[in-house]
Length: 130
Image (cartoon, rainbow, N blue to C red; front, top):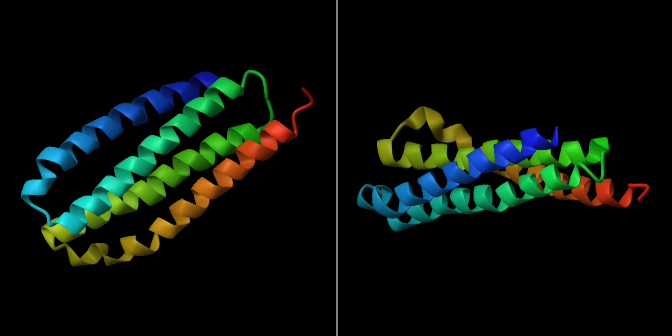
């Protein structure tokens, strides 16, 4: 299990760098500053939680309980919901696609998933018999 989290962190980290470069170079030429800032927020939170996922992968060897696994799972769900919804929102603004109006309601769910992930990580470490 820990290897899966480490591999996920590596791939999501690479994706973070690619999306950040896209925001810095290509997106700025087609979107206003607020939209670019929104996209960059998604990238930043994705990148922060890459470290959380990597930490889960490292800690799993020493703290092998379900709460540690849940932490990594919630971090990945959070990236999908929080960052993913901000990427879709940016797509909506740039392309004027109206059927994506609903994505703004997904972002807070991703934030909640991040919070649950950090709480699970805390409890998983606390609950350990070591």
